[in-house]
Image (cartoon, rainbow, N blue to C red):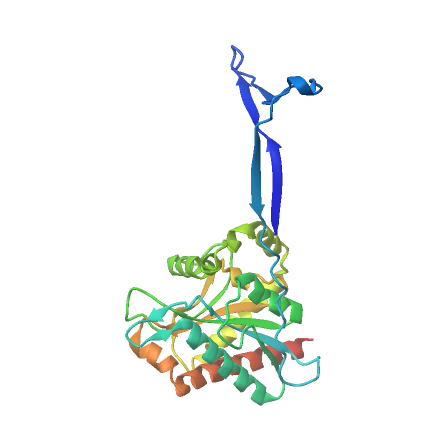
Length: 302
């Protein structure tokens, strides 16, 4: 859409401040003739052409298919494969492994393990190599009424020996410098798409955080603990295994949410392991076991 506007140039003069320096006056004068001046006395106004290009509204994102039991009363978990499309995420040049490919394969493996239980419904935010902004990812969980949102990622560090999984939950203040570093890196994803949407939504996100029910944040922490307890039987965790950061993708006000860094793409051994079928299976088994325990406890408490 293109908005055209023609306008007469105006001059803006500011009167000098009063001697005591306490007041200023703005005098806006038209550059053309005074209103009502005879046509024969008027001069062609100094007109300029302003073109404002307004981008077309983005189409509404299509909600993904929910897989699993047809019973809508069954718990629903939304698995988010981080990055995608033109955003590759972390990259291991030696092994030619991209984070976006790992996260999708791991998310699909987790889905398959959960569906095997026959008790849990599952939806993926993306099932192919596409880009989604962060707000779209957690909005999918909210719109579907998910009981749990898990965003899958794989970290990178300057220290090539760094390895192990980490679970992140939402907090206004990062729990440590590493958590702050990760939040800065992951929240920059939207800038890659050409528009810094994360900054534009800061006010809205802050309101959502302020209004978020205490039990939602507590539920996220409970799941993080369960994920470590069940997952450690299948894959390695860093210490501390649970960190907190202001991650945009976790800002669904009504859905317990965690971001799981499954390991380090920058570590050749760990990246290679995550890229194998067995590596993905072990990650999936750990996450699926945690999800099953979490929802089972919820049903008992009701």
